[in-house]
Amino acid sequence: MYQRNFNKALEEGRSTPDSFRSNSRNVSKNAVLPASLSMSPVKSASASQGAETFISKSRSIRRRSVRSRARVLAGQSATSILLFMILVSLSVTIFWLQTATIGKALHHDHLPSFFNTQKDEDSTVKELRLKNDGKNLSEVILAPTTDRSKNVPFFLPGGYVHGEKSLKRHLKKLLVRQEGGADLGVPIRPRWSDVITNGEESLYDKESISDEKVLKEDAFSNLSKGNNKSTNQHFTLYENSIPMGKRKLYPSPLPSNAEIVLKPSFGVHRPDVDAVFVFAEGYDLSIYAMFIESLRFEAKFQGDIVLSVSHLSKLAKGVESYLRSFKSGVVVYTVDWKCFSKKNGASIESANAGLSDCAIHGLYGHVSENKMEQVKDPREPRPVATARYELYWAWSLQYNPHQMIFLIDARDTYFQADPFQNLMRSDEVSTGGVLHLFEENFESTNIQKSSYNRGWITQAYGVSTAKEIGTVPVICSGSTIGEQVAIESYLRAMIAQFDKTKCKAKGCDQGFHNVLYYKKELEGTTGIDSIYTHEQGWSNVNNLGAMAPVKSVEEWDLLNESGQVKNWNKLISPVVHQFDRFKPLATKMNAKKREIVGKVKRKTV
Image 1 (cartoon, one colour):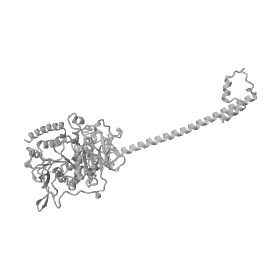
Image 2 (cartoon, rainbow, N blue to C red):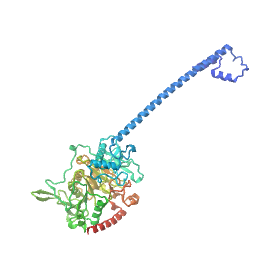
Image 3 (cartoon, rainbow, N blue to C red):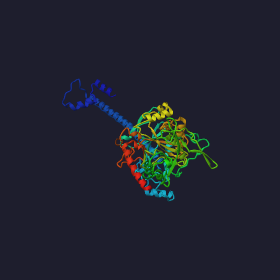
C-alpha cells in the first residue's frame, strides 16, 4: 500500500510524505520553486491532507503489528514458565519418592541433612533398650558413623534405587536388622547402577576417589568376549530368582548308607556362632599362634576356630599344649591320611606339601547297634588341597543355617579386624543364604594371563573352557565366606567338580572355584540366594599374592602410617591373605611371629 501511494504521488507531481517534510524544513520561505514543481494552493492543500492521512494509517498498522507480536511473545513466555514449573514439580516429586523408599533406615549419609533421620546416639540407645527389654546392646550397636575406621560400609546396598524389586529387598533386610538394633551405624551406598553385567546387577560407588591406583579395567561387561570398560564398582552381585522347588541340588558327598563319623580330637562346636575353618597340617607353633592370636585378639573374633592338624603324635613342639590352652572356641580335628607317591603309587607317610595324592581314612562309616564300622574313602586319592573341602563340608553341618563360615588358608593369613564385619547376610526367615567370593588383583593378573590358573582350568575342563571364560579376574579359592546354608551348597559343588573331572594336580581346586562362578554353575543352586564377588582391596579379604611380581609394597602403597595393610579406600584390611609373597611383609610378619610365640610360651609355661 505504501509503495502504491508513493508511486501515485510521483505521477501526480506531489511530494512523498518523507520528502515533503524534509523539503519543507530545508527550503527557505522566500525560495522560488521552478515552474515544473510549483502547484496551486488547492493542489498543495490536497497533497498535504493526503500525506497526513497516509502517515496516520501507517502508524495505525505499525501499532497493530507491535501489539500482535507482543501477544505472541507473551503467550510463548507463559507456556515456557508453565513447562518449567511442571518440570520442577515432577523433579521434586521423583526425589521425594526416591528418598521415601529408604526413608525408614536410620542413616543416609548421601542425602541432604534435612532428609537424614539419624537420631542422636543416646535417644537411639534408649529406644532400642525398650525394644529389647533392657538388654545390653553393646554387642549389636555398631560404632557411630563418625568413626569410619571402625565401621566401614564395604558393600551394603545403596540409596537411590530405581524401583528394582531385588534391590528393594536388600534395603528391607537392612531395615529389619536396624529395627532389631543391629547395623545402626552403617552408611548406605549412593546408587545402584542400571548396568547389567553377565546377567547380574552391579553395585558401584559414585564417591570420588583421589588415588589413581584404585581405578582399574573391568572385565565384567562381557565375560565371553573379554571386553573391558573403565569403572569403579567394587563387587558384582548375582541374585537367585529361581523358585525353591526348581533349584538344582548338588549330590551329597556321603557314600551310600554311610554317615559322618569323624569327631574332634578336642574342642566342641557351638552351632549358634560364626566359625573360621582352616586346613593347617604340618606347621610349627608360630603359624598356629599368629593365626589364632591375631584372629582372637587383633580381630576380637569370639566364634569358633576349627582346624585340621597332623596326628597329635606328629605335631610340632608346643602346638598341642597351645591349642588345648583354649577353654572354648577352638575345635581341633586330626585326620588319618593314606597318601601315595605320584611317581609309582607307593604308600608314603606324608602329603608331601600337597603334591602327593591322599585318601581320607575315618571320615565316613556305618553305625549300627552302637557299633561303628569305617567306610573306605569313596573317591580316588587326590591332593589334600582338594580333599579338604570334604572336611569343610562335614564341619559345616555342625552350624545353624545363617551362621557365617570363613574358609581360609592358615600359613599366609593375618587378621587386623573382624573378618565378618559389615558383610551382607540374609534374614533369618530366608531358606537360602549369601556367598562371598574374593578376587585377586586384576591389574596384576587374570585367567588368561596366569599360566597357573589357565592351566588348572585347562587340565580339569579342557582348552575350550579356559578360552570361553576369557580375560576375567582370578577368584581366590583360598578365601571364601558364606552363611552355612550357602557354604554347604558351595562345598557340595566343589566336591562334585572333582568327581566330574578327576583333576589331581595341586591347584585344581582353584580351577574348580573359578569355573563354578564364571560358568554359572552356582546359579540357581539350592541354598544360595545371592553371590557377592568382591574386587581385590575393596572388601574384608585382601588377596595380595598376584601383586608381588608387579610392584613393590611402596609402589602399591599397601601400608598405612602404623604399618598396617590397608585397602584402596585407606582403611585397614580386616584379613591380609598371601602376605608372604612380599619379602618386606614376610620379614615384618616373621618378627611378629617371634613376638607372639614368645608371649604364648610365657603364657603356657
